[in-house]
Length: 263
Image (cartoon, rainbow, N blue to C red; front, side):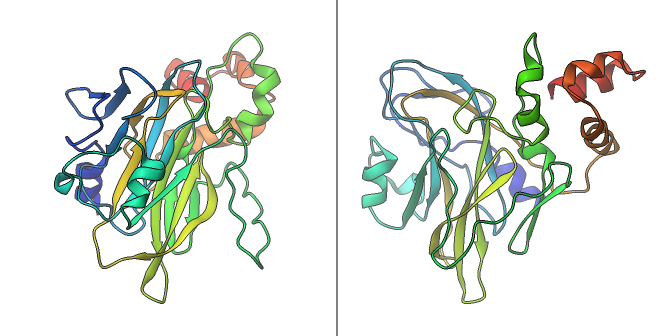
């Protein structure tokens, strides 16, 4: 699992015509227009493996945001990369894509109540039988002059889904019937099953559409081991402070202060 995660934690060399990747293939930027921004994971995902990106740059003047999902199409087999994930790639079949919006991303299945959000200091996110360290999943704003206004959101691990530094991931969780559910995770919170009945017998690649107002994203590697002591210290500190600017007055090593405030 760890080896596959390292391979998948970058973009495939096949991508949309307006995408430019850096040398490591972990940063994707749409260099013009608002479309032709499709990217794929380098490798198919393993069951329960999340493909996580952080929004690095926004571009004003466009309507719409990042789109994420899964496809059973090997990017290498595409004669032409579609202009859009929705509807073009989806219309090819065996593709499931979710359009991220600023505030309405939670999926409530008929007959089920919305699940309560767990405390932000819980170190793991649980989805079906999948357990993922929560800390890496959470995007954080930089503290500043007015950060106390946003601090309740910060302590609840919440940024607007489409904001710069927001982290969004996609994974599939196997079901007892042999199929899988696709889940979108936004800043450490599971949005619920956005698609069901996915085939687990075929390789599934992550789809990232750097669309419209989302201009640049980077892949965030996820470590599936136990949380580090540094991470556990940060969770305890954040649980007991009023806002992040108060961290500056604590008698802590400078590196730990910076980690608690910025990372």
